[in-house]
Image (cartoon, rainbow, N blue to C red):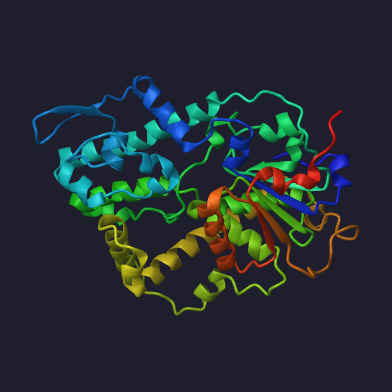
Length: 421
């Protein structure tokens, strides 16, 4: 992570931009999930060959043999094999959390041979999609163009895209941009997926064997395809601190081309809480620690039962026993606390000895208020009535009333437009 230059240190950052996929589409780039679908279908055979993975031959009830990859097998219906529909690709990240574990277990069976095949298929599905997604991102070419917008030096950017559009077309310094899900130039940094399963898979399921082991394989895949939003928020906080930005100083938050969809809602909940004048409720971890000490065996049972109900049978949260939900939440909080502690230690190591407080309180006497006196204003672009209605519901849920919606990105950032001679 880059530290700030002397020029950056003299800036008072009071404006935050959140850049979503619609921003790149606005710039004429082919970054929609429909484009990814086309890339996947076109390059699937090449990817399988590169990964040394063979297609699966599945015999339909009609006797016809269909060849598909493990992606279609795991995320589709192996008993009625076909290409994944447009709905899967249109809601790609959310779709990664929707696996019919019971159907997969029935297809592969519970003997050792079947379980080995299921584990291999589940792992291959992730490998194929990861290779395809990273390949698609790397294939996007962004030409340099002079923009008619100048965002100024008081802005910092959270970029949900993997591209360098801001640098190439808007002249934004890379030091002021945080790619929260990674960058196209660094394949290992790329993060994609859902945000429904941040807790570690339960090893005891594997030891039980049979179909419980099959459940473990899917549980592990769901964990590995989760974005782990809270971890990313920890990294974001490091970036903001090192950039001299403070949530107390943020007056305006621009949301450009970001649909605020379910997989990313936790990010916006964090921003809403951090830039609000309202007293924050006690942390979940504090309330959880106040609970009576739980019996380890009881906790294991509740966690296992939750996994069976949620992952195995695909029950919705409101259909699951309350004690199971409490147990899985305690587990999630405990695991998150461990990871957060690791991030804190890493952050302190990044700062030179004796400069920790200075870095954390950077520019405090010069331009940062002691206490926020009003909520940050949100300026949000939307795309169509469906998008507008959804964003209004999100803002209501987040408790944010100080916002303005615009039907285009151009209208959203009109004040940053400069005259081009």
